[in-house]
Image (cartoon, rainbow, N blue to C red):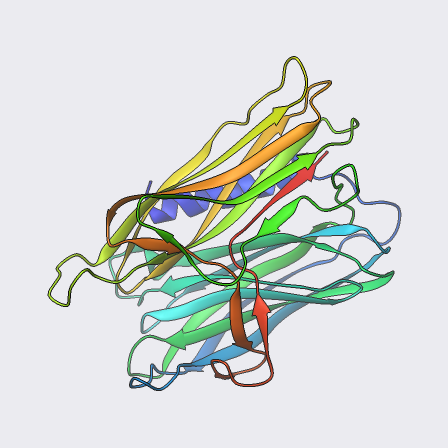
Length: 333
C-alpha cells in the first residue's frame, strides 16, 4: 500500500471509529475542538554541521479545553497536515496536555519538497491518545509543530489541521484504568520482528464493542557500509486483537500495512485501527502491534523522546520534557 493511500484510508477509518465506537461523554460541557490553518511557517532552522546539535522550531498551533472529573479519561484526536515545503523538513505533531491531567505525545515524519515526485510532498500526521484526569478541573491540550530543515538552507512549509476531544469520558478496565500502553524511552530494533506495544486488560461486562488504535513511529536504520547503495527500509505493521474468557469470543480483523521509508524521509508515523465485538462472557482482551522487517536497511520502533525543548531551541537545552511516541489504546462502547 502506498503512503498516500494508507493515510487516506487510515484517517477515514479514524473518523468512523470515533463516531461509532466512542462512548458518549457524561453530562457536562461538550468536548471542545478546533481547526487551524493553512499557516505558512517560515524561518525553519537549517541542519547544522556535525557535531553541532539541531535546532527545532516549536510553534503552538491550537489549544482545546474541557471540564473533567478526577479519574475520568479523555480521548484526544489530532491531524497535522504539511505541504508546500521548499526542503525536506521534519514535521512533528506534538500534543501536550496539562491542568486536570498531564500527558505529552509526539508523532512525526519528514515532508519532502513540493518539487518532489514522491507523494510525501504532502503528509498528514495523526496523533491521538488517552489522558486521565488526576483531579477535577479543566484539561487543556495544545498542539505544537516541531520542525527543522534537513538541508543546509533555512526552509519553509505550510501546515493546517484539527485538534479535538473525541470524548471526555472513555471507559477503562475493571479497575477503571485507561487501557493504553506507550513504549518507554529508547528505540526497539527491528531486524526481523518485534512485538510492542501490548495491551492486556480485564473488561467490565457492560462493554459490547472495542475500538483498538495504535500509532507506530518507525525509523529507518543506518546503511550496512558507507558505500552501500541501499537507502531504504521496508516493514510490515500489523495490529491484532483477541478477546477471551467465554465460549464464543471474537478476534478483530487484522489492521495491516506495509511502508517503505527512504533516505530523506527517514522515519514515518504509521496509524493502525481495528474493532472487535465483545460477546457475552468474554472478559479479557489482548491487543498488540507486530512490526516485521521486509527489506532494505534495518529499522526501529520509536519509544518516548527525551530532551524535547519546550520552546524553539537546540535539542536537550532547558527547559525540556519527554513525550511518548509509539502507543496503543482501547476505546470501549
